Image (tube, rainbow, N blue to C red; front, side, top):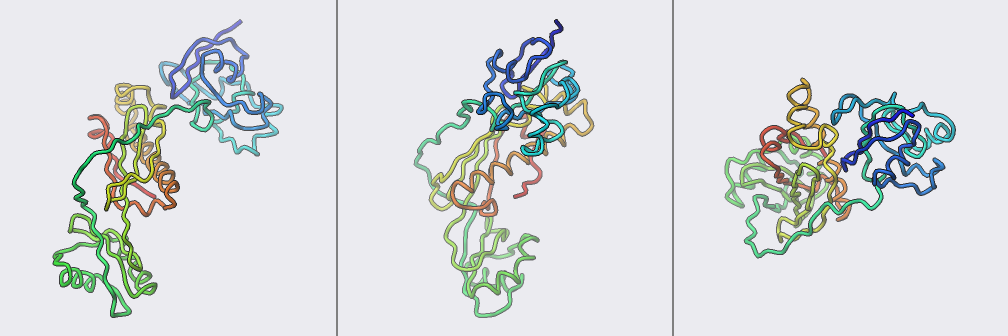
Length: 305
């Protein structure tokens, strides 16, 4: 009987399996844990996986290397919203070499990929500060803001983020007082109606395998929530050198790597703020760290809530 090469990501487990084996059975034989709540009847949708296309991990992978969708899998295709590159592992049978990405929600015993933050005694010197001003006027514009901040708080030559400017008229009609968030005493980055005494920052560690994030109260330094995920860049290579090669060989490779990180950060922002009963817009500052390659070659250029 024919055999085929199979790799599961992000775990990196690999092996040779016989043709006609289901992805679920192959995963089990290689020690890859994939959810199977319904016992392989295709009725739960928990074993959904993504098939990577092209040469990955020295394997020519393709959706065409699976037996076409049929039977129970067809019945549940629309119900589970399977994308063109996704299959139910309990139904998909192997007929060629494959690289399979197992999303976090489909993994059994998901890894603990975030260390508990330690407690340290530090001086809180935030670059973000908030200023409350009562408005004795109905309108609000850039000049009025700059004058008020200079006269009342001694802040001079303050710039204002263009997106904040667009929200001025709406904010001034909601309250007779506003809270102005200023970064590094140089730029207004947020204006909120009323007296707001909380500001939050997000600290991110972009690792080769995982991305960890911490939501911090910028006034007290308290960590109010944590979240983590596997670094989705792993689909471009299991290690940094492979990803560098991908970016070098493919004209849009660096852009793809960059966009993948941005999407991951946005997902973490949504997850971490939801834990604290907030929204991503409540994050007014973010600090990201990573290894040398990520800092110099995959610098995050945009962060969209």
